[in-house]
Image (cartoon, rainbow, N blue to C red; front, side, top):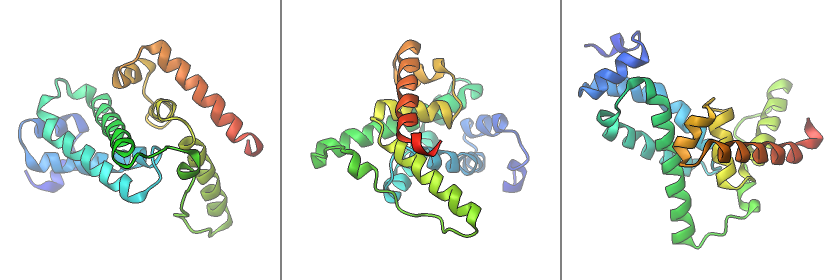
Length: 189
């Protein structure tokens, strides 16, 4: 099937074709999800090179394991589990290899990615940086659940499966994360 024909297909049929070994369908699937995966990692870490590397690693794992996905309807939680596991592995490697102390000062270093023209874009850019800084200041166990809930829109049950915790723990962590974010952004909201 020509590459252009995949663009008009629904995600479920693209997933099923990719599971059946169709390389063009897999390429289309990667094209459709790569921006979301990159965005999710950008809320979990602030180093552009790490974000790109993590995105590539997660997409590669998705491609290698797509045949093991039992139901195309559960693709999004399945992919989010891959992203979460890749992030947790990254944190463990950083701490182990570099004897890295994950202090907030390092996490709060955010580079200006967007210029400030026009004025509204500048305001949005500044607010986005403040929110990202507040997110990055959270411990990773709070950061991952709040990103999965607020940016990915996952249910508490899906998040509990992805993070291997109970729904009660997820609710508690989300509540604590929201409280910490409110306190960090108090003067701006």
